[in-house]
Image (cartoon, rainbow over all chains, first blue to last red):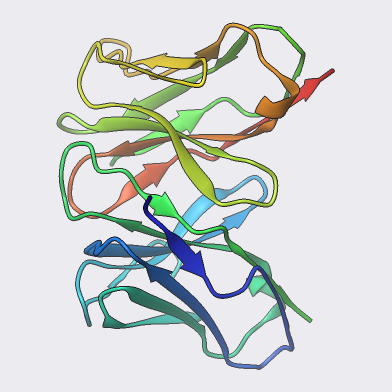
Length: 114
Length: 111
C-alpha cells in the first residue's frame, strides 16, 4: 500500500516561531503537495513539487515556503507562524501525470499557533 | 478555469436512508473524476473514480456515474450506515500536476 506519513498529528507553536512540517512518501511518486483544510473552505493548495528541487506555488503560498531535497520528502515551512495559520495541513503525493492519477494523502497535521 | 461545485452540507440522514451528494464540474478536455472521503481525524482517501464519460465508479456500496452531457458526478448509496459519517470531496484531474477539489460535504448518519 502507498504510504504518506506526516511527522506530527498535532502541533502547538507560538506566534513568530519558524515551523517545519515534514512529509515522507514511500512509493517513488514524482508529485507531492501541501494543502491546508479549513471549515467551509475545503482544501486549498499551498505548494506542490513535481521533481526534486522543483516547486510551484499553489493558490495560497503567502507565508509559506517548501523544500524538496529528496524525492520521498517534502517539507512545508512557516517562516514566522501567525495565528491565521492555525489549520489542518495535509500532504499528498501522486505518480506523475496521467488520465486517472489519484492523490494519496497523509493523516494530516493539526497546527495551532498561539 | 477548471472547478468543482458540490452541494453544501451538512447532510443528516437516518441509518438505511438513501444518499445523494451532488457534484458538477467545469473543465476543458476530458477530466478524470474522483470522490474522496475523510473520516474524523484522518486524511483523505480515495473512494471511487471514473476516467471517461459514462463510466461508473463504485466502492463500499457507493456509486457515481460520469455524465459528460450534464457535467456531473453525483455520489449515491442505497442504504447508509453510521460508519459512513464523514466528509466527502468531489475532485477532478485534467492532467498536469494538480487535482482540483470541491469544498466538501459533511454527512452525519444517525442510528
